[in-house]
Length: 87
Image (cartoon, rainbow, N blue to C red; front, side):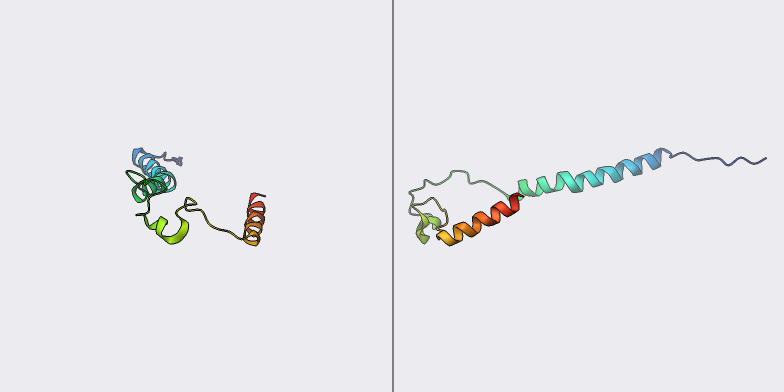
């Protein structure tokens, strides 16, 4: 009488499964944070807001801290988009 022997996952199978799980986690969690860390660097010494040597001050937006000058209609459209996205 022949028995069908069910073969369990061996050490190599478990190692392959663990490598697959670790690869998935690295792709989904660790790589985006590493790319953000590498790509984004904050300035070492931020410039004062009233400094006229910065490019932001020379384009006419130095006094308002770099914010956008929106018209009332643009502001209402932006508010409508924000409300729609919040739902």
